[in-house]
Length: 253
Image (cartoon, rainbow, N blue to C red; front, side, top):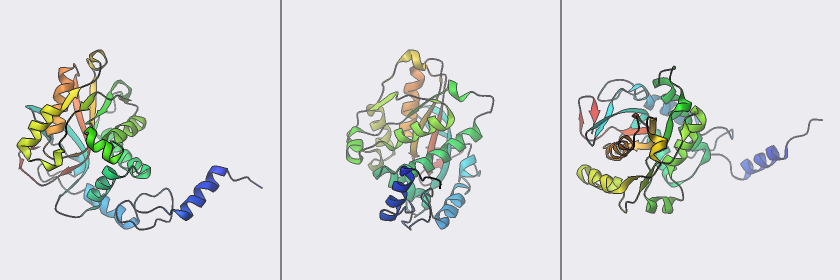
């Protein structure tokens, strides 16, 4: 008789006491390796294939850029959502902002890594790239107990082979989401600082990870800091972008 590993037995007992639930709607899932129920998974796939309102391509294939701080940063993202409407994409990321749910972070990280691999030329060596993140404010991190963008960057590093390295710090006492466009840029310029070693960044291609892009202020400022530190080029990789707000040409600002 084949012995069942103790870990598997413990996992099965745990799933009976605390059954896995869909990270979006809360429905109990039949398997522990699932993150979304079938309905929410189909909705998520549909949302990621919706056309970008600017370039017209599916979100996951979008060719738009972040235009901020006088920079044009290539942006890769998985999905989009309207802040005023309910969606699976929105439910997932807002849940992860508050709760450190491993299965949820694994799901989002894999989707982001897949989008990144699809857009980066096969000839490019991921092991030669650095991957960092837009850091959460210290106040927000203390309140939630984690930094969602940091977790995503670490996971994507494992899935792609790019070297994870924290290169930025955030000294803000204000939350970006509560500020208007002009105030967001002003707050971002005052908040973010380069916090790495110049010799490590010089000449390197850097992937900067964030969960959401709205105005692009945070990514723009952080990209500028990394370029000044010597990075050869920057690619922004985010889970989702909001589809509301000012949109013009091939950029969302």
